[in-house]
Length: 398
Image 1 (cartoon, rainbow, N blue to C red):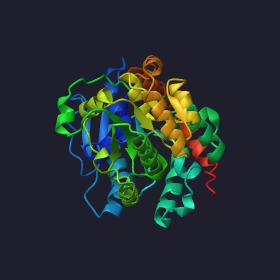
Image 2 (image 1 turned 180 degrees about the vertical axis):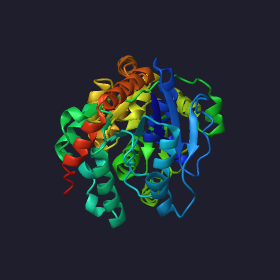
Image 3 (image 1 turned 30 degrees about the vertical axis):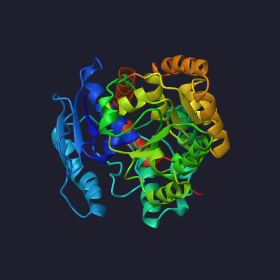
Image 4 (image 1 turned 120 degrees about the horizontal axis):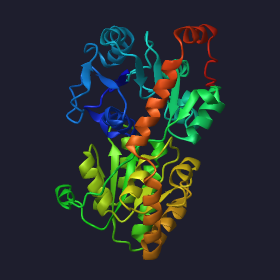
């Protein structure tokens, strides 16, 4: 089986996001999944071959450099079909459904296409109509392309339920494969020295995006500081997520100064050090498709205070202390409770490790191969017939 994998922007900033980590670990794990599979990774015209990419994987930078609004469209709609055909790819996997037009759309190719739709947060949490018109049109168009793919993968039962109910996709066409999150501890304190970060500190992992709830988290942390806790808040934030000015204004208003450190673009070893030496992970997100950080925290034995979301309960069970993410007081109370109870932290550590142990890269890769096999078993005639009949377009009214 020769599989093409979308690796757009994985040698640059997307590499540090949850979607980027999903694509990276899939590329690394597939060749060792115990099957006769060869993989071709397709990057953007701005990407060079990532240093972490296994040597046995072929690499292609597809398309030519153009204005930002056109590069992704040209690469995936015009250049990619020719390159994939020349490479003899049996199946192509689009690893994300993006909402911004400077990221690649789901392609249409002569070979079967599988797509990973991580979540429907732009539809179910945000009002799509509040987005710029260009983003609205691109996202709706890209969703239609996604649900008409030959196979759809998502990362949790929660996300599958939303895809089925909101988009009207048949449930048996949506395959749940939980992310692989193997995240060994890193006890090197030299990273903290290099980052000029002193212990004790709490860890926040997310972005400036409103659903990651950083402004409200800062207000909760202010309450903790006011009650005499000596901790610093180390916030790992995706710098390209937008909405930074609003968060910085709130940070200045709260007068937290050196008590908050904003960090970004950390390599995995450095990130593991931050998790390993923190007191707890504070994860107050308002919406998730899976939730990488709580699983990463569980893997290194770090207690988690997290939003009380159905998807986090699905993934982490009873390991975290769950709090109301819309209440600064409730979040501050949850943080103080965990920090003040050593026995509770020990129980949370054990539960977290057990929860995280379920999410291996090998299991994730094998799940993908099973979906690829299922899609490839469909005859060309059945795929053509399904496309001619059409699949109901996404119901994206908001």
